Image (cartoon, rainbow, N blue to C red; front, side, top):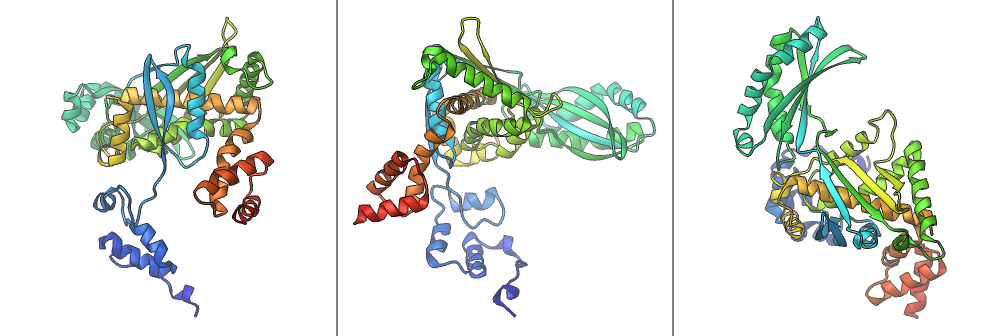
Length: 430
């Protein structure tokens, strides 16, 4: 019997052990050397006790660099934007996009409010259309049940706002889906709306004679949209060897491609999310919820398309806009508990979840501008690989000043590969 066959992932009481005890077990299981164990045991600026209570079965932390996007003017206010990401060129792209529209006012933002949706699934209703009307008739009772679940939210001006009922056809027959529309104010709102849905579900079943199953929020937060727009003059966006008008038309054409083709739209929107997710992560919000909501919203018209729009103004300038679901919060979860998230929020200076959402939308638009401009001019690789060359140099073993020297050679040759970096490093070291 081999050593692999002797291993077992069934470790009794693993969750009850300390992080170090868990790490020792993992090290024995995976054959980790002392240096790797020591690296995982070092949790950096996150207190091990806090880490152990944020998630389950903690053995270490994963540190992600936090960079600052400069040049951002949003609604007339200059801001510094913390972005947490491991990908080269993301922060630089936002800085460059913001610089090129700074002198004409930067970004203008708005939102649809802070409403979230909770869904209650009703099945086996003998008369679904009649059931829908019965539920709608109980609006005042529904409001009372929901608001009773979170009196603090109501005191802060939030709480139940409305009820909607949809009948949808499924493989299992018609389902009656109740939507609770709730203003969650400065919270992301998942816990609040989930509690309301679970509290109300038995009543809906009793009123209709059906059975309730799922009671949970929707991450397609289309009642909580954040919007941003900006204008870039042709003079500001002119690139080496290309007039601003040509750059403008290339960006518009690239957008039209993404709007029509889901294969292109997936990469187009991924670039937008590079910026959005970096700010969401930096502020301790739920990156998975935001990503799911944005991508679902991109398909709201029946096909998957662009989250942004690009067009030419009557004056001949380039105008870009974005509208995305943005269910972020300032209270609850890692936003309040994680010290780095708290520090990043201080840098941002936002005091409401609505303001944070609008800032994030502006970052997404800036990110998209830079990606489309690169694609329409020099190609995405030139700028991205110039920054990525430093990573390749470090992968080859370069340290200190060697990193910039090796990276510079890779860029000059136009060949950003580890084997080339290794060869250059040998030459440097003689």
